[in-house]
Image 1: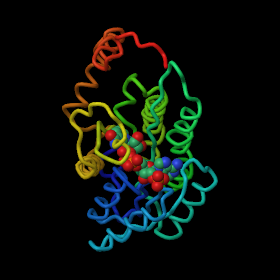
Image 2 (image 1 turned 90 degrees about the horizontal axis):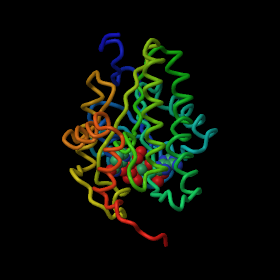
Image 3 (image 1 turned 30 degrees about the horizontal axis):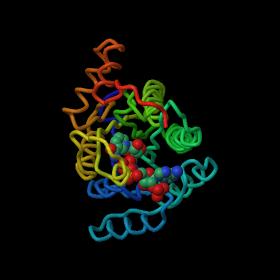
Length: 269
Ligand SMILES: NC(=O)c1ccc[n+]([C@@H]2O[C@H](COP(=O)([O-])OP(=O)(O)OC[C@H]3O[C@@H](n4cnc5c(N)ncnc54)[C@H](OP(=O)(O)O)[C@@H]3O)[C@@H](O)[C@H]2O)c1
């Protein structure tokens, strides 16, 4: 499988970006138009998508809103059908929509847990299934899942979010193994901290945080390379990979506990 036959371009069809109303998805959608892609943009916020469409028009870029909740399985089928009727084949799908709901395992909030799984994991699968079906028939396509470095290993408050992101990394690996022989390329995107609305309410240190535009540049650059993983910023992701992959797990867990102040006894509220 050479780079040439697995590489998609705007000549192959349109790009679909989920979670495009704000943050990383919005910046990626705009960046893709600069690369010549027509972009189908999905999120629940119709107004946010309209503003995005207008912003793209200023630069002669084409972004068409396809409003929807990715956790709605039937609707995602319909959205994929509508995109292909309007813009042609989806050649590139960037499944980025996701939510971060912090949970404490001492008092596990099952509503937040279920919502995280419904959106981040099941919602992504609901977008994937109709896209894979079509790409499989055409024997060509590129699917990129937005996970997170949180998916590398356990971190405080991430028992729900991190579990869904680890699952996405695993799912993408399965896809790349199974779908590559059918001409479908899979990539996984693992960002560190990115300055987006999702980060605003979170009150903890965010080392090496990058802007959404920097994230979008890294993502689009990565899509054009022939690598499975797009992880950034490099200094942060390399440290995380090292402590996750090369330290014995007990040392990793002690280190994270100390670094995040979880080594002190705290009575439950
Ligand atoms: N920011 C970071 O530091 C960071 C780091 C690593 C990974 N990530 C991942 O990057 C992705 C984007 O995050 P972000 O930081 O850009 O967050 P964000 O600004 O909050 O954007 C999230 C996007 O997902 C959409 N979304 C949420 N739930 C949805 C649903 N049920 N159906 C359809 N769309 C939905 C939101 O739109 P609506 O609300 O309009 O639906 C929004 O467009 C997420 O998967 C996140 O986990 C972020």
